[in-house]
Image 1 (cartoon, rainbow, N blue to C red):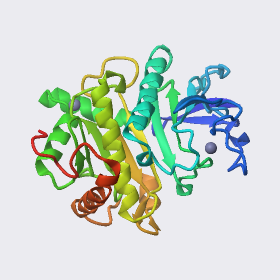
Image 2: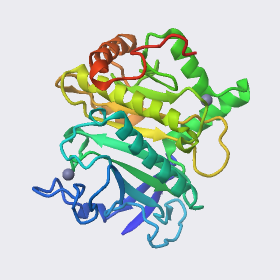
Image 3: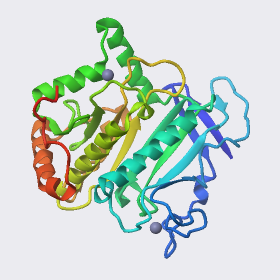
Image 4: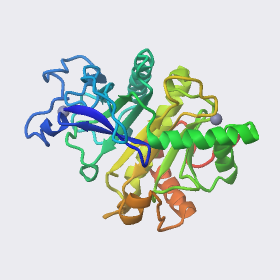
Length: 333
Ligand SMILES: [Zn+2]
Ligand SMILES: [Zn+2]
């Protein structure tokens, strides 16, 4: 059984699927993403695989609507992006700059492919890392969901950005980036094309947002040089997060692009990383207030945490051979 169910109170679509329950949980002694596995073959640096237990599928059976309790066809696509043939790589910062560029090129390919399907409205490219976020396969990989609807949170961002654009005639995201670069104190990394900062309004203790300095809606609009800067900013950000507590940081990240249909001149592509630790062995839980009202408490000072991440960035800079500056580089604005 596979269908979308609508929550008329929140405006949210729930992706219901019994396929997912068939997933093997942390299979022992076999990795479906290693070279030579059933679907992977040999001779690749990074590759896209179909998700065998997809919650959305182009083959999903059509279903009827309904009144207050509506449902819809779970049309769409889910895939896995295997980022390296090396099983034991712990995170993307351990891959070379050129290699991370190859991964981002796959993100571009997936975006272009899903754009050509007129029924796909939104694409989420995301990555979960760590047992704490329920990762069942440790081989480095990201995922994507191509959805037939515009999900709630990005829709909320779009509504607010549209209002801002109508009122001031400017992109809200560009204004945020400019202000963060002026303030400097929350900027963790910057290079010739991208900036990473712990946002003024962060929800998670070490949340990082990575933005292209150029106003673009899709990763497919980035030049090869910009893609290199994006890979560099991603390596710097993840490197800093993994150095912060001298242990691998569990996190989830998502690439926010504009919906794949329509014109969205007021949206600005960016990546948001939500790290789960607030201290070396303390998890920040999304619990009572976060789960029920979606409001967050922030239990420290964002500017101080950004400072800790900048120091962590400095400590990994030589190893990673970063192209930019830990902090707001001179002449970035
Ligand atoms: Zn593997
Ligand atoms: Zn912008």
